[in-house]
Image (cartoon, rainbow, N blue to C red; front, side, top):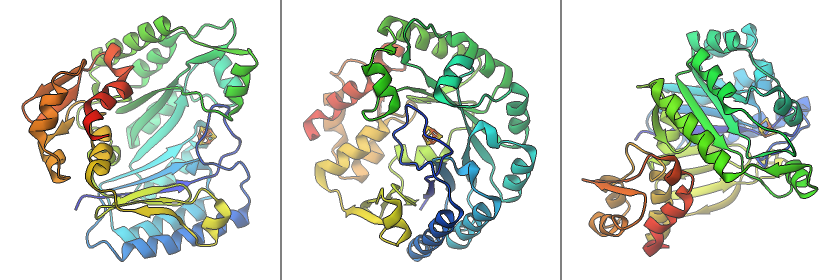
Length: 368
Ligand code: SF4
């Protein structure tokens, strides 16, 4: 079985104003020690269920790159002991943690892919978001030793009166040429500081026409540079798809470890607690259940339809008990959907992908 292992590191230096991930801004040494101890128990629990090497490891967060080297070393050692050696090993990192000595340590640990939260090159926005800028030279040097993913966020909300120039971010990509890119559209989450700024009128939503034409610029430029658009928000040079994330989207099993993680194994799904205290006390699980019938089909279908090369295919749909001919004939009538042989794919255009949630909902509506 090709499976992935995800580890969530829920610590950050401060909370970015738009973020609603489970992350805690206090990073006390004893909390980290307790967290790693609990991870060790969770890893040994799950490793008893596996009988082959993991395909991928992914350490995400939060900000895993701020972990002290000894804590990260322990986690890496536990992962190797529990799940063997993967072919792809990613760590997420923030710009301030990418000094040469950190990179050398990570390379020694067998990490071969770094996902950098660049977010934007716009100085004003970075300052408002409380994020640091990273230079093109630093990114290029990472690219030489690792598979580099650059994570961008399209700012759908701006301080009132501001304009954002997407071409500056595209220029950085042209200069660095990372192997992989994620380009997310900022969602507004209730309870975040950004939501407060919008409510008070200090920030405003970007016009839909501007968003669409900026996305068109991104799509055109990335295509011209040779990137393959293989998932709604993800692009890669040929051969550099994120194997780990493709596993989620294509219904493969994975083991999620740490606060707020989720997993999918032998037909069971689980989500872990979002309470750091409960997690450290060893009370990991929040929900553990076996989705069946339409529930599993909808879960599998809504992930698979995000992928633009594999899509929702016959093998996958039938593996979970669906009738492919039935969904293919329904999907053929949905706007923005292409049924091609044994695959159902979303059309790879800005107009369609900007409303992908609606379209995916329509494709799956008979099973909802
Ligand atoms: S660094 Fe990432 S996880 Fe942490 S607060 Fe910022 S966006 Fe959220």
